[in-house]
Image (cartoon, rainbow, N blue to C red; front, top):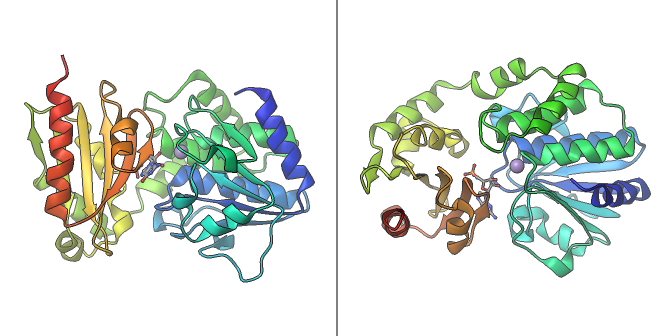
Length: 327
Ligand code: 5GP
Ligand code: MN
C-alpha cells in the first residue's frame, strides 16, 4: 500500500510509550497474528505493549508465541498512549476493549476490510483492501520501524497470511503475498508446520461436529445457495465448543454451483452467527452489511437475532432472491 499511511503509523508507534493492539471478536489467525506481531515489535523497541482479545485465543491458535500475553479484558487502571484496532474497523467489534479504543488519546486502525466505520474517530488509518491479510500491512509497518524480523514475529505474520488466504489458495492472494511469505519463510516461519498446528491438531469433537453439520447441508435455487446450520444440540452431541465451527463453511463453498455458501450457528447467548462466502458474483460484504455485519467481497459475516430457524428463513430468503436475479 501507499507509503505515507504506513510511515505515519510507524511514527506514531515510535512516539508512543505504552500501546494496546486490539483483535476483533471471534478472533481469527490474522487478527491474532497481526496484533501479536505488533505487540512483540513494540516490546523489542522498549515499549509497553498489550494485546486485547475479548474472546481470548481459540485453541487452534495456542501455538502462537505471544499467546500468554493476551488480555481478555482491560487491566484496571491501564492507560495507553495509542490504541490500534487490528484487522477490524469499528468499536463494536472490539468487545470489552471498545471503550479503551474510544477513549484512547490516539486511535489507529490497521485493516484490510471494506471500511464501515467511524471516520471522524480514527486518528490514523492504514487500510488496504487489496492486502490478502492485515498481516501483509503489518509486515510493511514493521519494515518501516526497522524491527528485525525474528522467528516469532515471522510466525505470527505467516499465520495471519496462511489462515486468511485459505493456505494461499483464495483469490485474495496476490504476487506480493508470496514475496512477503518468502521473507517470512526465510526468517524461519515455514508454512507447513503452521498449517499442521492450525488445521491438523484438532480434537475429535471438531471432526464429529463437521460430520453432523455437513450431513444436513441444504441447497436451493438449483444449487446456487448452499447452507448448513449448527444448533446447540449439535454442539452438545459432538461435545464441541463454538470456535470449532471454524472452517466448516469452506466445505460448502466447494459445491460447483454455489454462488453463496452459508454456515449459521446458534451461540450460547441464543443469537445466530453467520459466516457467508460467495463465488464472486454476489457481494458477501454488501449482503452481510444489510444485517449489520461486514467483511470482504467473497467472505463476510454478521449476527442475527435468534431463534435459529427464523434467522435461517430470513437470510436464505434474501440470498435466494439475489441468486435468482443473477443472469
Ligand atoms: P468469518 O465468517 O470467517 O467469521 O468472517 C469472514 C470475514 O468477515 C472476516 O474478514 C471477518 O472479519 C468479517 N466479519 C465476520 N463477521 C463480521 C461482522 O459481524 N461484522 C463485520 N464488520 N465483519 C465481520
Ligand atoms: Mn484478516
